[in-house]
Length: 259
Ligand code: 6PG
Image (cartoon, rainbow, N blue to C red; front, side, top):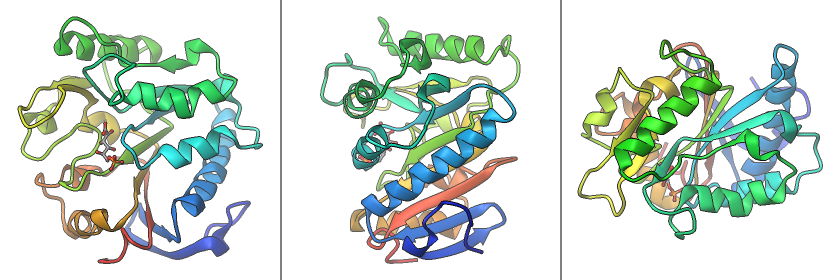
């Protein structure tokens, strides 16, 4: 079952297929996950360039991916940044220079470190109201994918995190955002959040070609166990199941300790 090619399979601690298109890979630590992910990114990008000239990704904020972004940005591999387009899966409704800004974090650790044209970066802009930010982001996605307000964008790669409560992107347990079927994006204004947020919707995530979840550390062990048990809106990450794509859970030994 191990993958071939240039991916360093010997560093995978263990590998299993949970369901048809859900693969779970467990590594020693985030360093090894990152090495694997960079190779996978390259393989997927190269495969994509055989069909079209853009590799379109949506990536997450949070703390977990920071070492991965640092590693990707210093990679010597030919990652073709000029043909890669970056979107964000979610954003907090705060200026980009606020330490909690996802765009601010990703810019510092990735965009500022790689030779990427500005027009390939698609932030979630902070408008006068969070609903306007969501609306603008939806319009930006529609225009970029040439959707003419119909259908869903098909991202080549989406990188997601998981919160200890089972949220992913800014899709939180019991929030009505989870039910959104009309829009590609939503404003999330729940009072329990420190900042209102903007997120892509579940249907957009599930329409992607390749979805990767990244979760490390023992604090994530329980939620990983829960999301693997069954689809349950209490754990929005468990509702991520691509209709016609692959999903891979990238874990370290700590986050995988209860599965
Ligand atoms: C964000 C995210 C969010 C994140 C999880 C995990 O804006 O915070 O996109 O979904 O991925 O909360 O966050 P950590 O990586 O910090 O644990």
